[in-house]
Image (cartoon, rainbow over all chains, first blue to last red; front, side):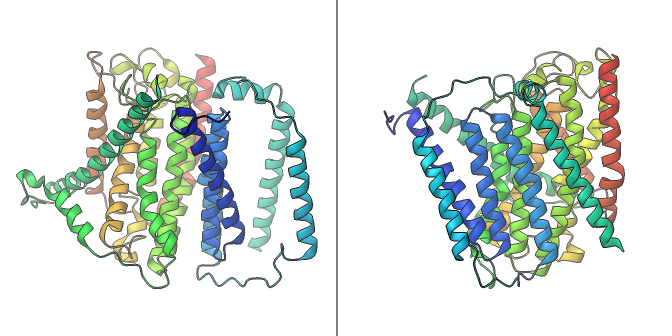
Length: 173
Length: 333
């Protein structure tokens, strides 16, 4: 049953659809934009949309961390790198677009078909609210039932830091 | 609560927040100019109305009457979006900033994080403004602003973690509740009660320096260094576009000082433990704002290298040591 537009649930639904559209449009802009800074702008819109999805999933902490880390740190670092490397924006576009090539198109089509089939075949059940998504709960879950994933992520970060150090050291010589 | 009442609450909250932020932004410009006049022994704006109080609305009218110009070669979409983004984070931050125990638009349990998350959007506005203007001075100012905000966000967040460790909550109302009572219960004073916040004055100092740098205030306003960059990232903006950047700067100052008040100065608690309320919050916020204006007209502007060195070589190591020591104190006491 769809709730009326003129009710609280209806308004929330409209906002949900708007944020969904923002995520998709942002993602498309990020991929297709000719100017790199516009691509970053699209990426930011996409990140904010994803953050709002987390908020709708009753995870305000994850949602805020998404904005803080992805918009506040990663998008800013990408933009900074673009501005340092290419201020006049004369990046030459490659002729062969990745999506236009047959292999790329086939891969994308296969993934799309697979995801759509999965979505239609899956039995969607409404999850009960497990906890209030607060910092305590997220921390406890991370260090108990998801400790393995947590440790693996920290390993990935360590490798990234070492890699960055090695690249920076090479650059000095 | 029925639907129309909820909707009414939301609309009223939004109107009050936008009005509060916009009025503050407009009249802090007036306060800044009066303060500058006082410190530099000149009158400042004193013609329009008593004490020149009609100056901000008249300035606004003048700016709105001017023609909107988009320079050739500019990226039109981002050029138009940047001034809007300049005001946006300040307004959204005030949704979760509590003015008193009951006066808050919408309290969420990660309110502190929410303010920092939206503040991150502010540096994007400077970046878009600088890049889309197609002007080398605006571009250089934007690069400076971004490197500055990246450098100062790190010690600021590390310092805020010390407060969060002590209060054990990201809920701004809860953080203030734990400081209720007289002046010695506030986080900034380490003497009575909690001996584990011995390093809090130090945290406050780091936080205050970082908030000056994050809001691009003197002596750290390198992204609008007139003698080098002509004007700064808003060089190509005229009319209300410039006005929005100008107001956004002051709106961000209000957010920064409100946060400092909530985290360190006891929020709406009275120094003598009497009559806590919204007025104490406002008194503390405006005292901090007056300090910031005073600093701007007293200290000369820094340079970009010393600015970045201050963050990467001094503030970040110090804030890390501060974090470790606070964690140790929490374990010991």
